[in-house]
Length: 546
Image (cartoon, rainbow, N blue to C red; front, side):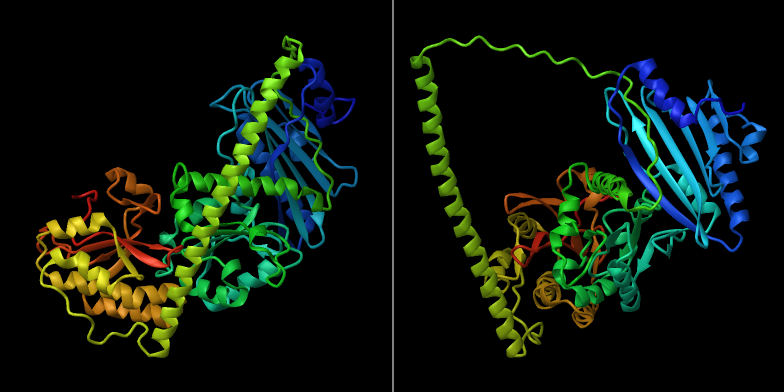
């Protein structure tokens, strides 16, 4: 069917919807994506990309598009299938615009509108895609970029901010690649966020990240750059931008456009540390939804930086706003009636000020105490380094022949570096584990090797820690904390510092299921107190096969 006279599809929708449904407030777009496709043959590439958009529209419509659509002419579909679909070439013949509105199959009262514009842009074809949603009575589901963007990226070599998108998240695993990442971060022409997802600081394996880099990449394709920063690269990046602006230890940092390590404020480039992600309401998967939604909202806010004009978005809410009725309360008169609440409010105000002052003093005192403890620990570490004892205890303290002495021994030899949770002490005292000395030596490795590595970092300290573990036949690996921890209740959680903390890592020895021989030590790093907290030893916590 040819395009109707009297204006474009967008203009008709804009003028018709208010008459059909009454005045409605416009719904802002959910995301706006811009990708570029470098091409030697601009005319040929323009036609290929346009045809790919038409094939996507045809698949969504469930019926063939008219012949004029494939000739690049204007067309319109209405009726069954999508609520509306259409396209029109621009006057300058260098642009082509299409739009498809369709009801959500899971929620009939929800309308999705996808707009696409193709334009010749220098030596490339620019594709601008905008997704909007109008819903009644409920919020839209977790957002992702429109499927049209992923389809085009599968078919063509696309770029964002001049960088090829690729088939997956960018793996930054060497100092050289960290330099390339830094160059992108500092690029003054960059328009999109860079989402950096760090692995565990003992491992370069992307699977140790708390959120899925692949999922984030697919859901933000074209809206952001997604990089996996391994431990090796994190050290190199930290050397260049400083700890406050870097990303490490399973954290996720969003580097906004305009990043300058000499002028940037950490709060302007949001960081979510690993412990916060693990403790996120709904778990790391819920944090991933939040990360993606925040990223997509940023693309809408950045739309005014693009050279092409904004789309005339005309989706409307499907129900009018309910009328507001203000009923003034009956108010008795009389000065006596007013005096009582005035006195009560003044008393409450004074009491609140007193409580706020007392609370402020308590917080200041607690903060000063924590700073003093941190300063003392730093001083001790400095003195140990001067004496050549940092991480080097060739003989080490004498270890008892029973785990029943573990509590007193730990106070004498681990205090300030490794803290044993009462749950760990209780489990050790009840254990039948036979290689008692191994349990004590494992704690000393945490004190002498792991703590210095966490405080000072560097590949040499990481290597020393791994070598010390290897000599004892031990490995440091992530536990089932995170998404699988809930399968075992609170087994992988301990109460520490007034909140639940997950035992994120464990030292693995023998895999024997006999508690006399199998060894495990579960722990996490408390960054605020700068110490290791051991929550369980020396046997297995429950797993899928226990």
